[in-house]
Image (cartoon, rainbow, N blue to C red; front, side, top):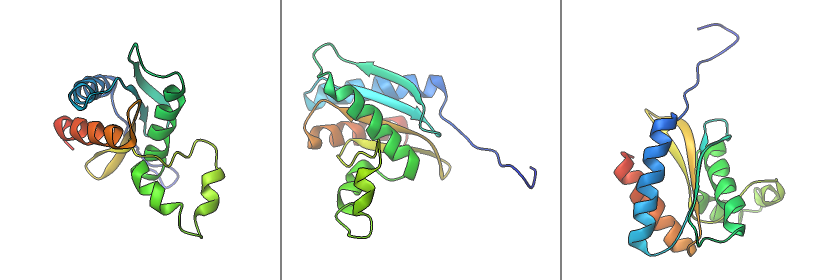
Length: 139
């Protein structure tokens, strides 16, 4: 390791594909047709799935949920409360910050390796499907 750089980790394509499959199954059990986005540790789209009957608007929402979760290492459900704080409320105007349940950081060994964003259900359905999928994924 150099004084001028560090090594970072990021989710693999294979792991992203497994997490997409777990999320599709979880959303089916919860009862909605999801849009699922997975970003790498830098917030770039790594994997994406949109069910046939999902909303077009849910596409960007899922991507932004994944981006927000990966960027800060916080679930987007936590952002709902965070943005109520007067000191952080101006962050709601930052492009791509999504404060709605359904976005989760993907962690490995204490490091953020990506983000998962789910949209298409109610906030509670998006949250439940994500929690279940990440649990089965090993988080």
